[in-house]
Structures are given as structure tokens and as C-alpha cells.
Amino acid sequence: MSPKHFEATYQPMWDAFAAQLAEARLGKRTDGAQLATHYRRVCEHLALAQSRAYPIHLISRLEALTQDAHQLIYRRQDYGLRALGRMLHVGLPRAVRAEQRYVWLALLLFALPLVLAFALSWHGPDFALRLLKASQLRSYESMYADGLDALGRVREADGDWQMFGHYIFNNIGIGFRCFGAGILAGVGSAAVLVYNGLQIGVVAGHLQRVGLGHNFWPFVATHSAFELTGIVLSGAAGLRIGWGWLAPGRRSRGEALRASAGAAIPLVYAAFFLLLVAAAFEAFWSSAAWIPPPVKYGVAAGCWAMVLAWLGLMGRGDRDAG
Image (cartoon, rainbow, N blue to C red; front, side, top):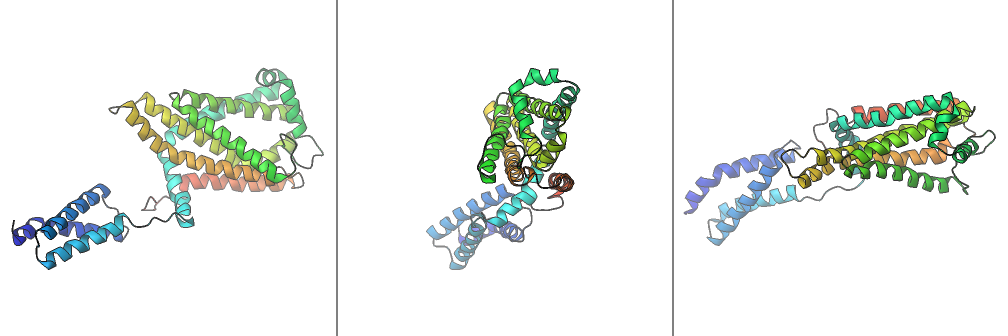
């Protein structure tokens, strides 16, 4: 093939590739698969032109195209604070909204048992004793008794930092169980959500019944915005995994599980971020008995509004998914 014939044959593709690169550099949406395909073709054309000693102007143009594409495709990624902020601001809220069916299902599986267990435990001690031992209930009573310097401590601790580590371990453990049990066709995640809802409802109802609600509610009000939401998102991720196994569609079960995992991982990131924030509030703010309850309730209202706005509004209207 002569140089002129070669150039005339592939000129339209090179022009389209150059236009696509220009749009991508401006931040406009582009077909990534097509961009990669064109890049490989232009690399092949450059190698062919060099091996055949085609005119220098033709080789120079192909070299410029491949260099521009290489810088765009393989440019150094920003893994710093800016990328993290972008993920929190855009990527995670969008991922949660994209899987909102599983989020709503997880919320129902968690919230309905919680409300039912609270009502039954508040009404009388029988239901609470069916789920928890009497020694466990007495332990919770001692954690929220009057006159304590720090509320909600499960065990003796030297300070808030030790409790911070304990709360991280506890919260992340709950989230991991909610997510990891999803591999059992989603039934495991559903069971963990129901169980945690029942347990939280029983403790809340029992403490309200024995007259310790005035200590319990200020303790849980603030960090619950992050902790309960994190549990629900962890369960939603597990349900997403389970659905990929139950209903693979036209894919093999392995392919469906991989696709489900890709959709579920952002939910796990969001859940673990929320559970980490919850642990910090629980250790350094919620447990402080010296902070007046009205102040805690006011901060709690702000935290709930922040979490709901983050999941429901952040990232809307942003053209780049991050």
C-alpha cells in the first residue's frame, strides 16, 4: 500500500480519534472502549508506517496522536485528598441511589423488627427476656445508670481513645457480617439485619421501661445517624450480592456475582465510612455525660439531616461521576 493510499484509507479514523481526544481533554463524556480501540489501531498504524519508512509528516502525525492518547489514558491518577473528596461527594452517594431498591429493602428488614421489638419490650419484660439474658439486661442498665461520668461503656476502659478502638471494632464487625452474609443467597444478610434490629429494639424498649430512657436517648441520638445508616447500607450490599447469585439472568452465576460485587462495593465503602464516623461520635461525644441532652438532640438533628442530604442530594447534576 502506498503512503497516499494508506493516508487516504485511515484519515477519517485519525480525524475522529483526534476529535475524541480533544473532547476527553475538555472533560466531556466519551466512549472509553472506543477510545481504547482507536488508540490500539493508531499504534498499529504508527508501527506499520515506521517499518515501511513512510514520509516523516505522516509518521509525526501518528506519533503525536499516540502520545496524546497515551497521556490521556495512562495519566497519573490523583489518589490524594482531592480524589477522596470526589468519591465522598459524588461517587458514593450516586452508587447508593443507583442501588436504592436494595437499600429500601434492607431498611425494612432492619427498621420493622426494631420498632416491633421496642414496642413489645417497652410493654413488659417477657419479650426482652426471650431475646437476651437477664444478666445482659442488667449490664445495659448499669451502662446507662444515673451518676456515671461516661455513658454506654460496655467494659472498663482507661479513656475515650480505648473506647474509640472498641467501637470501631464493634461497628465494622456488624457491617462486615451484614455484608459478608450476603453470599448465602442474600438470606444471611436479611437474617443479620433482622437480628440487629430486634436486639437494638429490645435494649431501647427495656431501658425506656425501667426509667433509663433519659440517659439512653441522648447517648444514641447523635451517632445513630451514622451507625444505623451504615448497618442498612452494609445489609443492602449483602442483598445485592445475594440477588446476583439468585437471579443471574443470562450470565453465569460467577459472572453475575462479579457484577453484583462491583455494584455492592461502593455501598460497603459508604457504610464503613459512616460506621467509622459513628465510632468517633460514640467515643468522644455521645458518652460525655456532662453535655446537656438538648445540645445532643440539636447536634443529632443536624447529623441526621446531613446524612440524608449526603445520600439523597450529593452528586446530583454533576456531569462527571468521579
